[in-house]
Image (cartoon, rainbow, N blue to C red; front, top):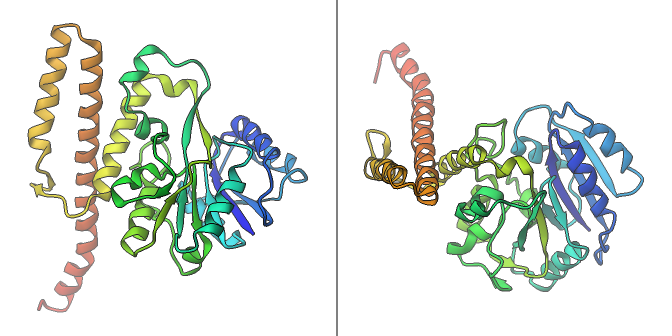
Length: 321
């Protein structure tokens, strides 16, 4: 038995197409179940889910607290079987997706985590300048050149949320998603699945890449807008800083920002003067990434200060120590 788990919010039109593709999946050697958590949708999501209730082994539940990881943590209570497959509500699996992941998990019992290729599925033809964009963090796709086999820590970034399987025993032990990171409204630090992967890797869980388990991640037309992409760079920078281990800080901010931000500002100015649109965009993307790091550093500093204040109040009430 395995369970596919996803969260959804206000994507009824896309979700309908995604679930229709699930109706054409080859069944794995064991039974399977689909759990979808509606994270407070206000569109036709509930009706879409109801329309597939007799076509798929589907169980849906609502989680009103905003945040993808809140929704996934709620969905974990409905998981059955030995393998939990994580994906997104805008991801289209290949017909043998579950078969490939099931086969890999059965053949390699010492591995706890599995991932596969995530290819782009363009809603419209992308403009030529899209080649300037770092595709992996921007569009949630990964390096298609990665071969079947074990994944070293330096390649963990290629195991991403749209196509990831984790042995259910890990969640049964009490492991949960970190709710302070990942999609939550329009402004958040990216990297929820990566945060979980880093935790599990540090605990010694091994990762295997399943080259044949392919999915396609829908790239919507509005995601081909430069403003959207540059905002994505900020969220990516926020996530990278939140996930960094023991960053070198000065005045509460990563030290490299004091060097790198002026450098990117200078590059933008130079590209503007010499009318180099590609160089201008790339410098702007890197600058926004650095801005994201700075934003998250400030937020984390405030979080630390807020955690310390009750202790300070207690010491004052007790007369100090």
